[in-house]
Amino acid sequence: MAGRFKVFLGMAAGVGKTYRMLQEGQAEAEAGRDVVIGYLEPHGRAETTAQATGLEVVPRRRVTYQDAVLEEMDLPAILARAPELCLIDELAHTNAPGVEHAKRHEDVATVLAAGIDVYSTVNVQHLESLNDQVAELTGTRVRETVPDEVLGDADELVLIDLTPEALVARLRAGKVYPRERVDGALANFFRIDRLSSLREVALRQVAEEVEARRVVGIAPSPAREDRIMASAGAQAIGERLMALVTPAPGSQRIVRRAWLSAQRLGADLDLLWVPRNHDYDTAEREGLDALRRLAVVLGAHLLIVPGEDLVATVCRVARERSPTYLLMGPPARRSALRRALRPSLPSRLLDVLPGVDVRIVADRTLREERPSEGAER
Amino acid sequence: MIGLLLVVVALVLVAVAAWVARGHRARRAAPARGPHRVAFPFLGQALSRPALDAALRLARADGATLVPVYLAQVPLHLPLDVALPRQSALALALLEAVEQRARHYGVPVDARIERGRTPRHALRELVAHERYDRLVLAAATDNSGDGFHSEETSWVLAHAPGEIVVLRPDAPARPILPPPVLNGASRSDGGLEEL
Image (cartoon, each protein chain N blue to C red):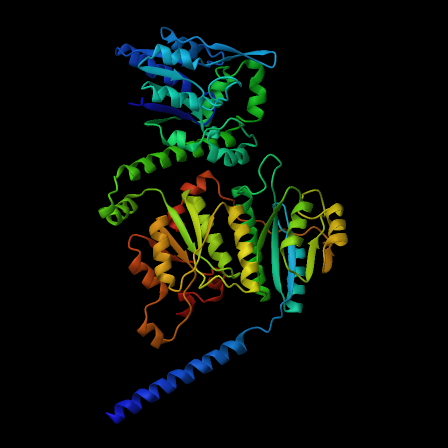
């Protein structure tokens, strides 16, 4: 049976991930479990080193690479020692060439497979999917990344949270880096605005993981799949927006408004175009190219799903993507006879997508042209 | 029975006549616009109001569509196709402002965002991707970065097809600034209200 995997996630170095991991390791040891430190990187922090006192340490092994001697975690020694719980710092670390695996998270997978529980630590900027986003936020790109699935596979995810101000205070007090590195760190990575953004990313990441676990936790069975999907959708806390667009310039207002709303909610955005077929004219092709480029810049997902029946196609895609909001332009003006014979598109979508908010994106510039109610009176 | 049939036929005829008349009205009401497109690339944190007004006047005179293009710059350490949420927020706010101003001129807008490592690279992408008849370029008036410098202007004059109009604003005018860009605070404040 595989061991249990617990990850301590932080927004940046110095928030106390390793300290907390050691604290929990000490508590487990005190409760009578066999705990060892597989790898610890205290970065010269006295508090961290003190917290490790009393715990057995599996000695590092020395690896020679290009005339340099590097110290790495000794995976075979940990497996031979076979403790109940192993504390392994720095999950995103890249191993020196020549050892069993290229990455430490692969070592951890081997330890877990051997039935040993593992506690480990990682910073949010090391997550593969967030690497670009964090690089844009902070101007610093980290090379050592961890696939998101590694975090997704963890049995427990613990966010070590600290306000940016408190972290900067710890940095100034020399509790994170040696004194000579403090000024440089404060001027670059450890700026309050950057730390605030990173904190937001870390909090959101944990919230998404918690939500994903909750939704996955509702075990699907083929016979009840539809009902379970509806149930999970209804309970979902995270938002997902889907905007109905066409390659016409008029759709840009919808894309803009949808993207801004998605940003405010921290939600993913899907742009859905339902063409009748794949025969696009020149204007459609140009518009589609522009829409594709816009989607990439915005980080939105452009879905092109041909279909004769718009409502049925939207309904099918919505079942797959589980949006919580559907945004669309105002329906075309129709005669009274047509309105009487057939409900409007938003009405039909509301009927087929219960639990999804349908929002009509109006042209706000039109508000200025219409006299207010007070003026009319 | 025949009376009922006559009433139904009459109703159908009235509906068809109304439909034809509406289509005719719609065709008459539609502005007579040719396929002309006036590209108006811009970059930086703000938009030159005189340059935009000049581009809109040209587009109106031509019966053309204005194609405002925000040129996003992708830092070298990021992949060229990475999502750019911060620049996108600024670009969309500026494009919204352009669209509102264009409405006053009665000029249709087909907005774009192009990306490149440098302004010139983004301009090259614009020239490669977009169809336009006239390209209006606002020259920089200071070191704010909100206009095109001589290197970019020279490149456009040498390499971009179509008619090129380089505008040098007469005097620094009040620029069009985007509304406050989203930040962490505004994401939590009033986000649901907006929806």
